[in-house]
Length: 318
Image (cartoon, rainbow, N blue to C red):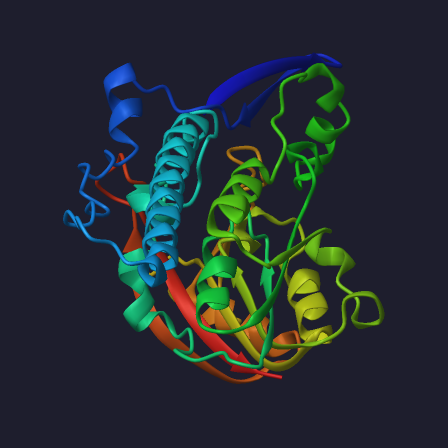
């Protein structure tokens, strides 16, 4: 992360914006799996000193097929090399397995969470929505399970929920990167059919986007000025189930009037809130969902750190 200072009406404003992770050339090269060793794709046919006329067509077909396999192998090798190079040009948030043994060097690796996360094993025939998809890990995972997936996210990081004084001075920050570069690359490499829609969670509308059997949202509410409104918009397009994960503080107890939440104001990494587990669950109920249940509580660290924030995976019905 990089910090930028903006002076405005007598005070200094600190903006923390994501930047590319600095990595050595050796680390960048290590981010892509080496190509598989070469192997013999075909053999020349054994000598046939007396090839009969009726066998000529079969031999010709064999040779043509062998040449096509060799050309396909060379195309795959070229594609893997190109993909590995393009990976280094993206600041990856998600760790995603791509074809050819290539794995993106994401800040967060969610793969080990899948068994306990609450994502149905079979989503065949279901229409699902991934809210704030970023690089698309969850969208592609739902696609693997048979779903027809729509993924939404904002267009640029200038569209994030910055505090009002910071938002009014965003024109002074010229290098805010776009959102969706990693998604586009992974989408192409996988050959995905996930539909990405440029939209804020606040803009979700059943008249525009339809309704969904499953709505997934991960690590978004802490970055929003109005998480309850966001949950209400998700409820408006949910006809089945919500699967939500977000940051919680397990040390916060109940206050004299009920569940409690820390307010941080969005000034650091655009983090506004860290609620207690009961407060997060209560917000889901207050947005109109029912049958709220906790699937797992887990600590997820960035791939280059040893400790991370506590998070909860919550399921609820429409």
